[in-house]
Length: 166
Figure (cartoon, helix red, strand yellow):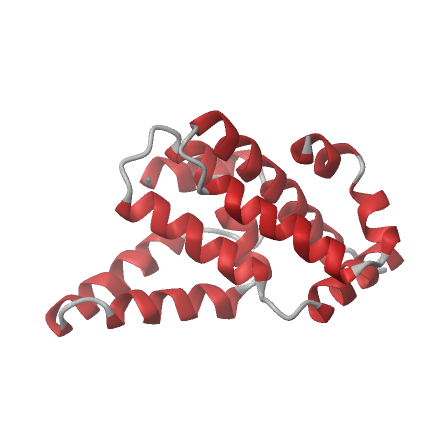
């Protein structure tokens, strides 16, 4: 249901301007992507992809729509940084778990990176901190390769190129 809501009715969620409710929805999506049922986690990832892509695409417009301002104010008003939490959770699931729906879970990662570069960089640093020092350079190189040639836009061709690396 959240996937359909975010795909077709995202404006209704943003118009509400209720930060706790919006945070609760994002929190349920975090829970959803961690669900062992791959169909449930895939639907949650799809909903995340819709909202992250919406945020990215609206931010690229010359004249920023009022809906983007409302969305950014909802994000800023929430105590938790759900977009960083979601990005971290998705990377951890894809890197460390043996899951059957890697492609579905990886789909929202690109728009999340584009809209949250600092969260992406923090994730790389946190991941490196959990590894042996001799692995740090290789790990950094792997993430640089992951983003090599990726343009700052969401097109099917680019997204498919990112997924071939997974």
